[in-house]
Amino acid sequence: MDFIDSPTEAAFRTEIKDWLNENLKGDFAELGGRGGPADEHGWDIRIEWEKLLGKDRWLGLTWPVEYGGRNASFSEQIIFSEEYALANAPARVSFFGEGLFAPTLLAYGTDEQKRRFLPKIQSVEELWCQGYSEPDAGSDLANVKTKGALDGDQWVVNGQKVWTTLAHRAQWCFCITRTDPDSQGHQGLSYLLIPMDQPGVEVRPLVQMTGTAEFNEVFFADARTDATNVLGAVGDGWKVAMATLGFERGTAFLSQQLAFARELEEIIALAQANEVAADPVIRQELADSYVGVQIMKYNGLRMLTSLVKSGVLGPEASIGKLYWSNWHRTLGERAMRVMGSAATLIEPTKGDGPSIGQESGPRAYDLNELQRIFMFSRSETIYAGSSEIQRNIIGERVLGLPREPK
Image: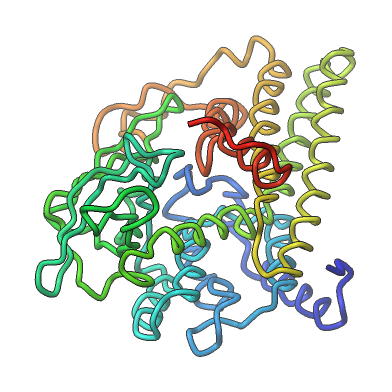
């Protein structure tokens, strides 16, 4: 892939910069890049920002024009992600809807499904969550036990999902469900689209050590969805689910490296302000983190080139996931060493309102951004495919090593 802008791409980059300069002001600019798929910081402001993106078709950028998009090329998608991150614009709230579900819908959905769901994603009227993991089916996703049975013109769903990010905010869930009761493993699964606002769906927030509760347990007890709300063929849900994961590990994290570089810059500035930058151990650790960002950058470019050539991300995408998640966890640890004894101190909560993501109950404390990164990054080697699973994929499917004994 040629990463030098063509004249058309340069004009597109200028258009994005001009739009961000014109609109990224006031509360939007003050929020900066805070927040994320698993961080509700500044939620209401980010919702309004997302609506503005949708109105001007930056949300749905790559969708076909007939579905409200700009039909942007892959290169233009990369350019948008780069400029968005460089501008330090607010973190997106439609990650699961626009970033994961929409490209899967475009690949496997019917025209009727696309016209039903895409406009609501673009207008931010409907948010989505991902119903994959279960208590006994995390990395072993094919072991899901949530069942769906056809009852007339509706699916009746029973089961439990866990670690469902922002389920308490979502109106819909794309859910891996076993629709063939006699099936096992990858067979007999279907990709159902389930409305969250109904009596048969219960969402229970899981409070984390960060003091917030973006993850949830979701219980389905005779929850219902129309028979037409299945993406792809009934029983072929594994293929559709793997396509969604491909989007998650591919272009969905294009701007991540730039965000990580900004975090590292802030930690280096803090080290200088704290007068610990001269410490040889800390200096070496920060230099190592800088090298890691560059490795991440060039490996990402290599994956993008592979994606352009083949149209899909192969198992080499696991290299990127394994690398960035471990790198970021280490960065959080190094940030605490830079903070020194101040890292052990926390601010009392401002007011006695509920924690973000909780319905009730006082919040015990507030974390600064570096403390939040340190704590939350512990989960990054687990979600979206644990490091152990990524190593298996790399060993077996990239290096050709024997499969791990069952």
